[in-house]
Image 1: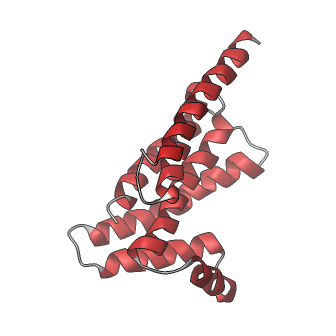
Image 2: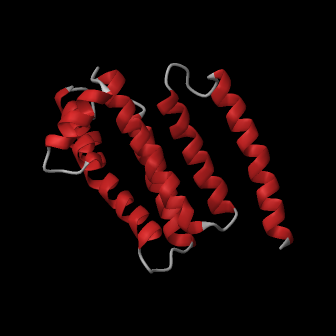
Length: 164
């Protein structure tokens, strides 16, 4: 019980610190999506270090999803309304549609490593999503190994996404 109390006290301190950064736009100016992405990966580390393994995959996945949205809005210069409309008309779900669009965009840039980056995103984001759905919805054990795998995969993907 004492460990849980310390965990919640630590979380409260970290949340206050993160809220302060969020409020003052210190983490990454110009986009709340980028700020939230940073907060989510920090939360994933905190959850993992305090043995809340199933919650890690959720935070790790959404830290990447926030940057996919950022790329759509700012790098691709599209609107949220356009994303909503195109998603509703697509045969894919909103997450898969957005991933496909961002991967196509990155591939089209012809920058150094853009094809490799696009391939890494296409292959690894669905794996990370599977870890999240297993952790969130399946009657399976989500242990330290899967939690760490989620964080590692997310951090690799975040490094790629932040280039665009």
